[in-house]
Length: 272
Image: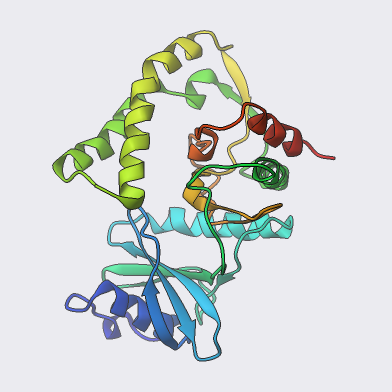
């Protein structure tokens, strides 16, 4: 494996750095590297090698919790064992899930071609496709040591005070530099909407039992992370670590649509 000092990218672009790291750590020699849809805190690229294979390269900035990123990838691999549509992760030459050098870390996975996300909402058979896929995902991860259902105090399921603090942090950053388009703009809108909903959540939490059964299996099923086809949910981008304290249902269920569509997802969610 190359030494980290060979990869000093302070004066190079992130795209060039990601391309060099795929070569040095993964032996993927890209002939073309294009920018992909940016994440909130990550830069994403699509690299094509000389054989025509395409790879999704996720670049994380300095300060990223790499242990959490690694656990997320491991959980995704576990989900694949249950025939869940999670892209195959490419390991480094040393068998690691993440390559880190200087001020960047990257992970590489198979790129899913000809897809569209659920960012525009769900319609028709897609509700059932997503329900079926998420149900299978939950049942698979229930067998994971960190994913098994358990009883916890209700305050651990939804700590409104901590939720408010967590939502206010990104909103303060957005206030300094308001995003105008793309994923950052959607994240800004969604975060503000969730903060506005906290008073109603407080009332709901007051009526909960003192303990609840929970199964924390994934974090973000936001619409950009779902890739539904006409009749099936073709892939899920990534699965955050199972120890994540508060899972989110994501924005795909918040989109307007016929009232029976979420019901179709709930029916398909159940095992047949």
